[in-house]
Image (cartoon, rainbow, N blue to C red):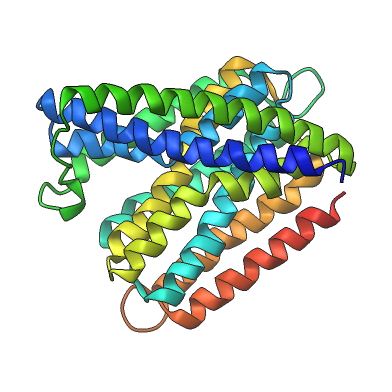
Length: 318
């Protein structure tokens, strides 16, 4: 009963985060259209960052409030959920075709991003503790901007998902941006504060809370986007959303978080990092086996079962 109020406030916070991110993206996209930015630039910046905003806000608030332990757990948990659960459920809805550009660029960059943080928390650490410090955070941000540049140079100009929405009236645009910022602020405050409260009440570490509860909730935008895309048989958006979000989470969300404060890493979480690597490898195997570059329904079922195993291991840690 003691934890009921923090749980309810946590749910309210997650709803505010998701709504706030959606409102802010809509308003910012409208500004982009009015500024005559190309559909490609709008897609790569405003829309691409939109689904990673909940992770970004939660991490920034947690770091600013002295709870950086949530940050790495949140990203490892979110990225694992993206591949195993979101891609798995999407493939169950409709088999996913994987484009050549994803195979050549996004999947390898996803591996590189995961390898980068693995090395940072296990090899390149300072002050006799496993951390991602400000210098390493800057490296992650530079890699993120290099990825965006690579994407701009390689992305085709005729892809359907580059078509932006029409500009909203100025009044509605400003209201959407203001409401979005307010929603993100309120959501970040509620989630970071009540996640800390629940961690204390349940006797769990901040990292464990980040791996499970926080990661699951902040990945809801990706889940909704990919499942809806799969139901419309739009495989490109379904897998592109997952791969792009994973890359953004590591390079930009962790990069910015590390600039605020060094991010501590519990060595026990190396098991989760191994699972994240395994998830990437499994995805690659599925893409290259069978007819065409597809993730079939039965492969989606295996991915989904893998996420259940990940949750079990994460909760068993504490």
